[in-house]
Length: 113
Length: 112
Picture (cartoon, rainbow over the protein chains, first blue to last red):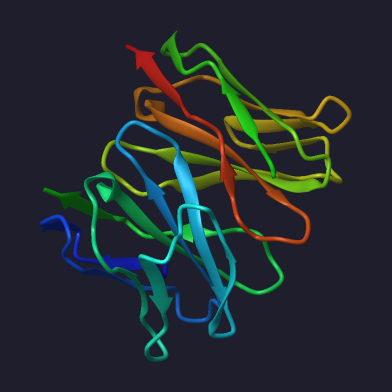
């Protein structure tokens, strides 16, 4: 069964550094998402992406964040200048057109020191 | 925007007993309600969902009910087993957008 994949599984970075989190959505999916989960808290929506543009973003997704689909398979989340409070698990998700079901990747644990 | 409340935050049940987790939502335009199971350090996995035109859906030992008037939905797990131990999240999607709004999660522990 196809699955969403994410790399790396764990990223440690220093405050102020840029990080890029990578996702490979399920191949025939057209809608892509990033969510984050701070340790012990609920999953929070960051951004949705369809047809090569952002369709919706949350207030968390400020100017320090950006997303890109650089080729036909990858979907990336970039944080330009990381802060301590960016430490969280970041999940990518994808779905088919015309359905609601979103499928999540295994996550990237980002630790900002 | 949508707000989803979930109760209880923790739940312990004896193996073989039933577990019920409840959620309420605020936006009457919400139309899709999935439940995700998250084991420690793993991805959220979709276990069951329900659409607003349906009142109940069942899949083996798990069922979900929806009361649109009261704006609440519940997850029912019968004949619980140790492998049911996990954190369960309810979520909602509002018609017209596609973002999931999650509840705060319920840590379910099955006592052998």
